[in-house]
Every structure is written in structure tokens, then in C-alpha cells.
Amino acid sequence: MPELGKYAFAVLGSYLATAALIAVLVGLTLWQSARMKRALAEVEARQGKIDG
Image (cartoon, rainbow, N blue to C red; front, side, top):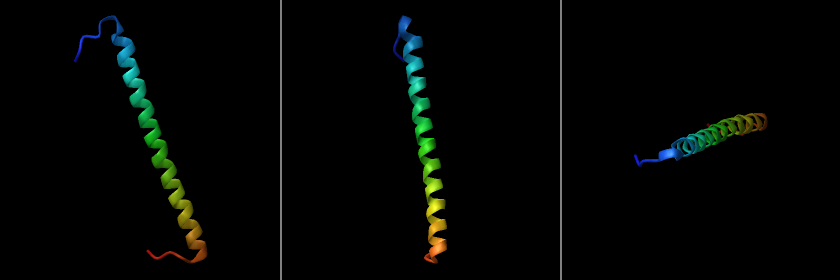
């Protein structure tokens, strides 16, 4: 790891914040995808078009 000197806290904090934001975005995307799949399955079930 390179020597960051007096900027170590800022640089590592930025890396941590970026990783956290990416994790949140991935989590929200997966949650929304599951929610939409359930909603689509409900609509298809009401229409009688589930093919397995």
C-alpha cells in the first residue's frame, strides 16, 4: 500500500464511502428486482399465463 501521509484518512475514508455507496446501490437494485419479479408474477397469475 502506498504511503498516504497526512491524506491517509481522507483517501481511505473516500474509498470506504465509495464502497458503501456501491454496496447500497447493488442492494437496492437487487431488492427492486425481486419486488418487480413478484409483482409481475402476481399479474401473470391473475391473467392465467404462468408457464412455469
